[in-house]
Length: 116
Image (cartoon, rainbow, N blue to C red; front, side, top):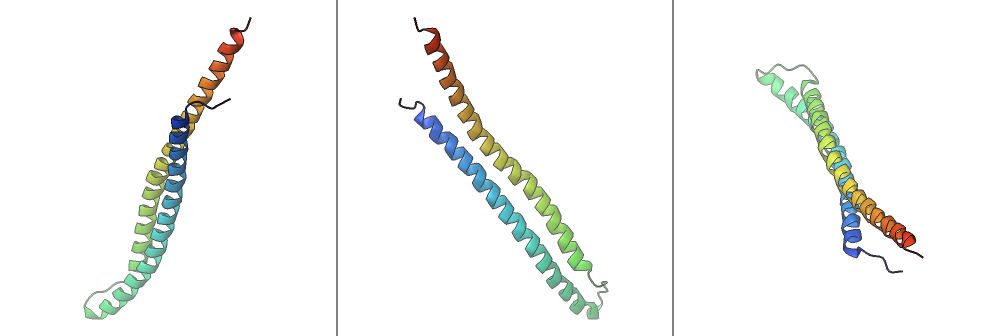
């Protein structure tokens, strides 16, 4: 028996793939931002120490802590938004699959009821 709704199956698969890609990109972005905030915070801390001799008084680690906290806040924001987007895409693909399955089961039921 040939399967119906080939276009809908393709669209559902595309949405699922987009959801997986969005999830992977979100995770890679969060890892990159965390690494950049840690490394960038250390660079800002050394810059703060260098500027400390020119009238700027900053305790050691002030800039690295600010970079880390900022990176974590940005990462949290990206996890919430990117994760929501990934979940939405994947759920749309699953929703299409469920509707196709519902149509198939309904057709099977109608066929069984119409048998003599």
